[in-house]
Length: 341
Image (cartoon, rainbow, N blue to C red; front, side, top):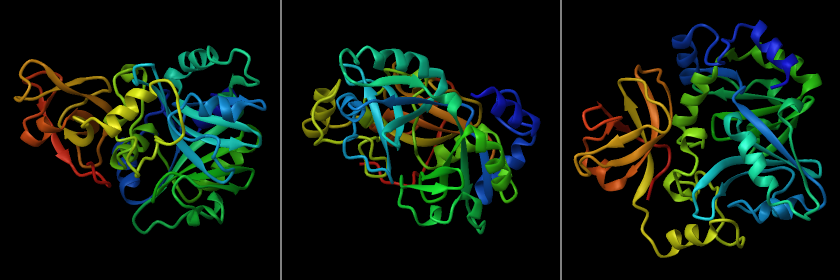
């Protein structure tokens, strides 16, 4: 994160770990019912520039990057040769360049791995995290969309991109937007939006992400999932193209789609106690063998914690799934805003 932006946000009361502004319960309630803004200090950016940037990314990621228009963004995975996810990006264009947003904890390793494929390609990959400020905005209930987000923001399709004052916005879903500001304009843009949105920390934003059924890949879960396990090929997420051609792991991903039956899917659940990504879950159906893994987790406005869990479909249907151990906390499975086949 840019040190000037970090100092600016810290001066407004966010905790050093970015999780809250000091009133977690109030922030979670505001995220559930109203308009909020979150500094996305846990996210980083990789810039891909050069005349072959689109082709380079297209040949490595699970989605179509050559067809990415300037007014849209796309989710895309980066897999190992065995089809296991190393990263899940949100990708959009910045002029002739491409920006890839992902959790900061995996950015250095992913940047190094991507760079190994450059060889003679006319593309340059750099860490662009310090060039921009990223903020999440959500409006739920009767809260109006803040005018400072840009007049076109409310009419965007999902993953559409529009200009806003000295920046741009991306519509993530029905109630969430990503605001992207070049550093010189970040402070003024934050103040304009914060006048009509309650500032909240990462915990509240991560709960919104879980409520939307949108997974992420972090250091604890790298190489744990093939794309279908995280529902990435479903239209509600749309991070996999089956017509774009080859990429690392494509054969396994395609075989799962066309010939195999997906045995694990990502579900939303509630836990009475804290859980963390990478924690294994267990079921009477599988005995001492784990039946899945926690993908992401956050405190819930309803109390306890909510999480996305990648688990065997049969184990979830049978019930009795517990987290951390065979006698761990019992998970209560909740609905997702989309159908899981």
